Image (cartoon, rainbow, N blue to C red; front, side, top):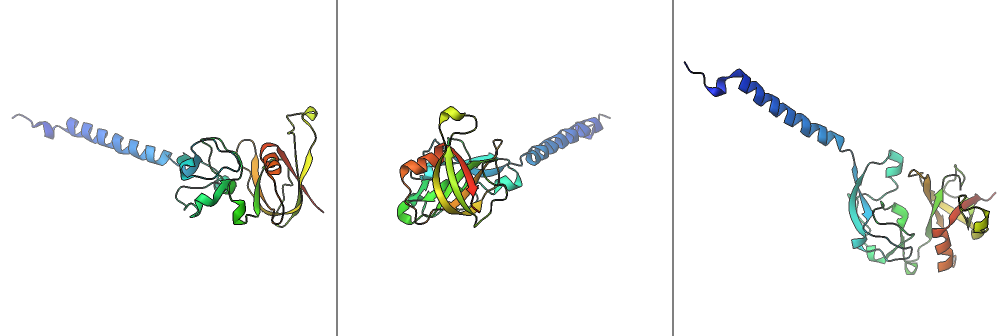
Length: 201
């Protein structure tokens, strides 16, 4: 009697192996994608530029637990008044957007200024409420011929000391500049030059 193809145990075993490999492959792919969705810049932006919705694109990244809290996720609501915000500092297209990267326009009464501070350029135990002086000058790599440091802000309180992120060991420190008359030259220096924070006694 002729055996039906579907009753051949070798055929059944082959089908089961193919199905098993497919399911296992799908599981491995799903388990391997442990990235999270974040907002990234769609283009280069300059400090002071108005924030536009088109500046933001979705990107995926895998960050450490401490670093993740410093960046804007796409599953969190953007500020409703996005049109009234400006970029607090320059950024390159493709870079993830930090929570402190956007600041309210001067007309909106902004008092918090974000500073990008390299590892070793501020006290490690800096905390909210500390009074600090902020200096700007050449980075250690620039050398002495690049000029001297200059005092940019005097006796300002720290609002928040962010976590160190990135391979370069940079963190964002928010300082309160309420009542200060900040001009474009000072903001540009704080954005483009090496920032050093000195805690006052």
